[in-house]
Amino acid sequence: MPAPAAPKKKPELPPNMVLVSGTQEQFQARAEALCSALGWSGEPEWETNGITVGDAWNYVVKSLHEAFQAAAKGEGMPDPASAILHLGLESQDEQEKFVAALTEAYDEGKDADTSAVAKTVATTGAELVLPLGDAKKKAGK
Image (cartoon, rainbow, N blue to C red; front, top):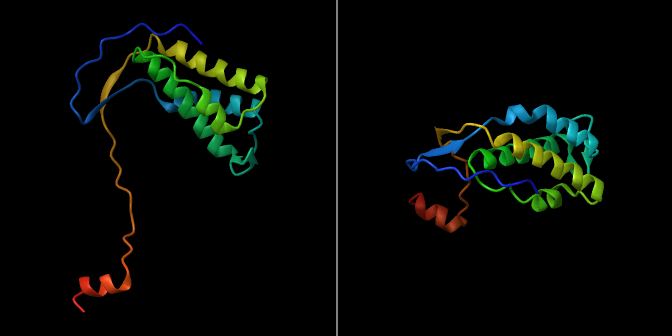
């Protein structure tokens, strides 16, 4: 594991704000190269280890960005164990490649600036299923 980032004083933020650093886009090329080295290359819908190439790329991008942001915020590097398990990386070589990429992103984030941005809130659709008798009562029938 890399040396931890120096602790940073976190600004007091209102509840609708979050501290961020960098963008996921800056890790796209690196994630694609790492995924190719781990066996996820080709069309986005192709599968390896039961995971599509597109999903693996997105997950690796997210993981690299999270490591970068953790360092920028002065936090410890996220534990790679859950990501390794999620991706099904079984060989020592695959795991070392993944951890090396996370460590590199974490080390880059140590000197990165942070900024406060508004939290993104998304409303998701949900279906309400009522037994037929309850639906009739609600409809006044």
